[in-house]
Structures are given as structure tokens and as C-alpha cells.
Image (cartoon, rainbow, N blue to C red):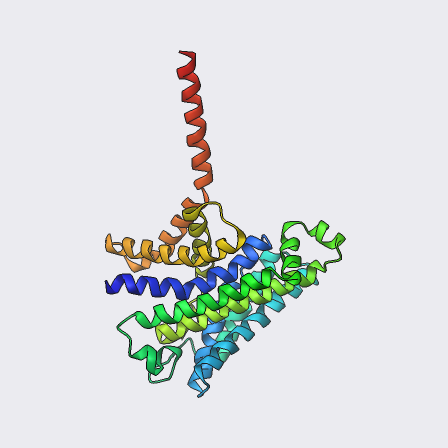
Length: 299
């Protein structure tokens, strides 16, 4: 029971990353490598600020702002510097490593004995692991609601149009460069926000905690889409959270089968690859079914 509750709580906290990446990967239609730098950047910012006595909520919001600034740099390199988005993201991700070391002063900083969002009186009184579930639900309801509302505004529709067809969007007077920059800022802000939450839940920040983050975020998106089929845009945002929870249960099952925790990144990559190849498998199986039915008819 406790393992299931822990998996749900972790899924909810990590779902922030899925929603953040959804804005660039699904709406703007490109994968942003900056997230592997902004996740530990958010964690480092929040942990360093809390260690200096800042309120945990303000520290978490500060992490969002710092992450958005990293997204802004990627956006400027991409739109104004005409650097390919993949390379722009890698450049900022690489720079974030040194920035994180500067912020923390060393490779790893603990929150032992420090106040965090998970140590307030109400959450501390809950049974084990329920603190992450309750806080995760609140965070995801707020974030998902804000993103859904934003996408229904005129600005949000311009953002969606930019991802659908840039030429058409420009013909309608939409500044597509600004939309891309905005998307990268919000996306990386959310990723850093998620990093701050995960760091507070874990009790530490580490300069290497961003490795493989894009795979985890993509897994939340892809698993949610595969599990729940054809959905509207708003429903897909909710499915990201459910996909993140399902992904945590898959990892829990893998550990129960006796695999080492060191294999999780490899297993995550395999799971994501299989999910993304599912349409190909369906097409092949459907073709074989049609072929078999045709042969039976000829007989």
C-alpha cells in the first residue's frame, strides 16, 4: 500500500515536467534539450535559497523564474541567433551545469534540518508518502487549470497556431518568434518548478539530477496518449498527469521484478521507444490481418 501511495505521489510531482515539455514537444512540435539543464537549475535555485533562509514557496517560485530565464536564452539563440533548436538547447543545458555549481557552491546540497513545502504542519501530520500526494494534486490542478485557460485565450490560440502552421500564423499577423520564446520560457519555468518540488521532496539537490529528464517527461506524455487514445487538447494535458503516474507504477513493477535501480534510465528509454513505436506495430498487425483476410477470401 505504501509503495502504491509513493508511486502516485512521485507521479504527481514529476507530472509537472510532462506538462512543461508538452508545450514545446506537442504544441510547438520540437524537443527542447534545455530541460535537462533547467530541471537541476530549479532544484539548485530552490535548495540554495531555502538554505539561506528564504520561504520555501518563494524559493520554488524563484526557481520558476530562473528556469524561464534559461528558456528565454534558448529562445533567443533559436529565433534571433538562428541556431537550430536542438543545438540551442544543448548549449544552454551545458551552460546550466556550471551555473548550478555556482549557485550551490558544490555538487550536492542537502536540506537536512531546513523547512520545505513538505514540512508544513498539515502535510507533516499526514501518513507516510501522503504529503507528496496531497501537494502533488494541488500543484497539478492549479498548473493544468492555468495552462488550459491560457490555451483558450487569444494569446494561447496564437501559440497553438504557431505550432500548427507557422506560415499561416504569420499571415494572420502572429509574431511566431515571440510565441516560440514564450513557449520555451513557460516550458522551462515549469520544468525548473518541478525540479524545485522534487528536490524538496528528496531533501537535496544534485548537479547531475537532470540526466535523462527529457526521457521521463516524454514518457509521461507518450504513455498518457497511448493509454487513453484520441483526446482533445485539454484532455491530453490531464492525460499527461495520469501517464506520469502510470509510468511510476511501471518502474515500481520493474524494481519488483528484481532489476537494479541503476537500470532505470535504460528501462525508461526502452519503454518510451516501445510506446512511440506502437503505431508502427498496430499498422503491421493490421496489414497482416487484412492480408490474411484477403487470402482466406481467395480460398
